[in-house]
Amino acid sequence: MSALIQREIEESYESKKKLLTLSSDIEKAGLMAAETLKAGGKLLLCGNGGSAADAQHIVAELVVRYKTKNERRGLPAISLALDSSTVTACGNDYGYEFIYSRALEAIGNEGDLLIAISTSGNSQNVINAVKKAKEKKIKTLLLLGNTGGKLKGTGDFEVLVQEKYTARIQECHILIGHIICSVIEKELFNLD
Image (tube, rainbow, N blue to C red; front, side, top):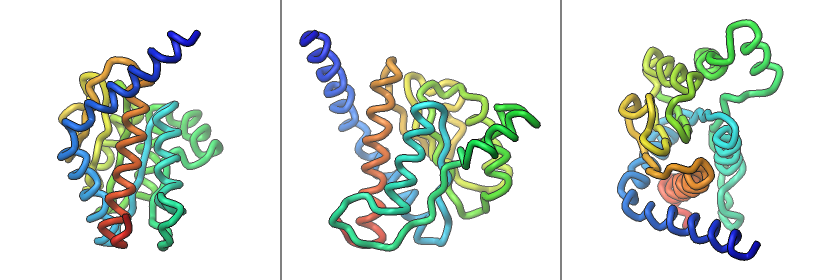
């Protein structure tokens, strides 16, 4: 068992260490989010499964605060997995592939930023959200994994974690999300 645990920790460490080569991209992603908020826009996030949980996690960091020591106002960020009633109604009436594009249609505005998280880049509901964002002139920041899938090259900006295993990609995505929160707190409130 200890060999399994050690292997998991080492794989996670190695995946995160590779993010150092993406420092410039992560900085640009953080600045993109910060500029959106400075200009009065909101951040809208989506993903499936663990990526949906990551989206909600990042939203909580922004609405409440990222670092305990950093007292600041809440920031406008919303998960497009609004609630189980909306998601299931849309899935039932229109199809699961439209749950995020429908929510974006309802609450997204020009000047907002869609942060779409996908480990495969092939989730149809996320692809449709990116398409809807373009229609509504909403900028898009994609956090992708592996090869980027069908979403690669479709956003205004993307950060691609080139790992094969979903767990490693998700671990890197949440770290990137945390760094984006840190950049936002620094840019908007001069908090470290």
